[in-house]
Length: 173
Image 1 (cartoon, rainbow, N blue to C red):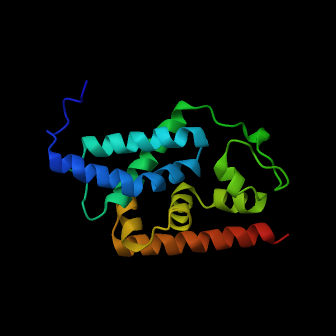
Image 2 (cartoon, rainbow, N blue to C red):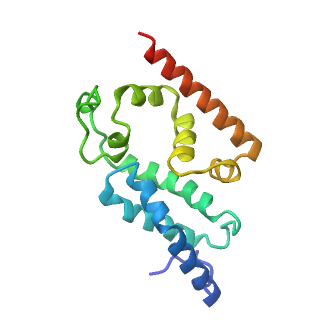
């Protein structure tokens, strides 16, 4: 049964939405696959598109992908709250072993880099990964974070600085 809060659909809405899904579905699936179990990536992307359809009148036409990434972040956070996390004692401390089923750890299996990223805080980590993995910069990053362009540039600069400092501290034996 359709959501009663959905605005009435038009042929133009359907055409516009079809283009949005075709243009951005791969990016969203990759976003989720890098952050969680690959088998959940398509379902989570579909959930984001369902939200986009319900909120299509609120979607900024000039910044669709950043809006989708922002919604994806909320969707991922909600999904993670539903699952039991991997106990810390099961995460390898060295880069020798990769953790099956966790693409983020597969890509960042190096213990020093994971440690440096972990030490910068959730917001900095989100900013760095959106920039590095999703290729967001400037206005798109600002849209995802819900801040101004200059604020996003400053936040990225601060996050990079904190990561360099954390990396330097970890590497100074």
